[in-house]
Length: 420
Image (cartoon, rainbow, N blue to C red; front, side, top):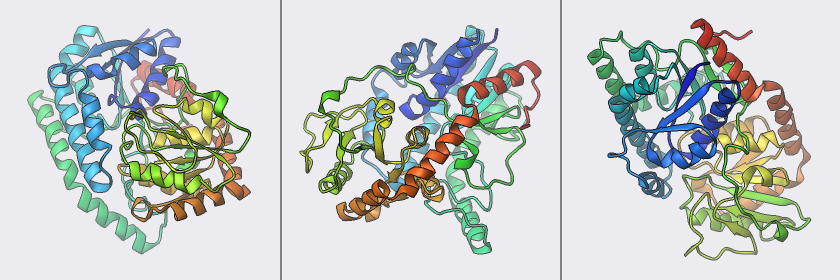
């Protein structure tokens, strides 16, 4: 038995990846403890895992709600910058308190979200192995892969490669502060310079390989395992099931972060008024109190049982968060993507690239454009067929069980686990 530590942001999209993985390791007889700010405690305990708080003074109960409310008002580069600042603040807290907390708990290995690379430094300090988990699109840059915050599709021609490299060079300075933070800690702890912020044993992404552009430079120990989501790691959510009709169901959610953009919800509702379908809108945890009236007669809830609704949905209108996109594809549901920020544009681009949906850019969003895109995805069979193709690909990827197999092998051998 190994005592695993889990490290990821206390945000739904990342918890919905990491907690099912922790549950699978626990099911196999391992002990699992999540380390994070106190706002994550309720969800971690609900998943049946152990919890240890980090940085309660700096991030007291409720601090995430304040942060996410502010982030929910932003979009584009402003939201990306806000997210990067939040990631750096979280890293400082874990680097300050993490070593003692993990040592005291007797942690023997760590599963580290790629967005929280400070976990790898602490693992090196404690001389314990770690595996990197990609909850979002992989950060690994390649010349032919468009920056993840763009909706550019894959194109290996020379001008697209140069365009990608120029933008990567322009964006990389935003990462310098975090790299310097990690470098300073490594020096102060007498650790060798960082080769990579990722694990050298195994890197796992919950994407199936078919949902990624052709990659040339990924290490041999990078694995496309398929998604880890399940219902047992989530709190039950009430829903007015009796209000559903026999019309095709359109499920709309902009996630749990970008849920304050009321103009987007207005456009979604208006776009669906004349469609022969029933619309369900989840506000991603935002309060219904004071929320403006929406056109038509949509069912609007603060939070929805997303997986159960996707089982019945014909189309999903989404912000193209990685978890939501993969959950849609798991149930063979095509999408209309309205990406807001971070890696959502890149996820949306992949949805369109595989033929499982359409993109409506936020800065070009109108009810008319969204109605046309939704009607197209709802009525043209190819979108559903391609979504079902990805459903089969996901079913064959192995999911959380395959991920756990790779993790156990990496921990037992402390050697890179290469693709077969």
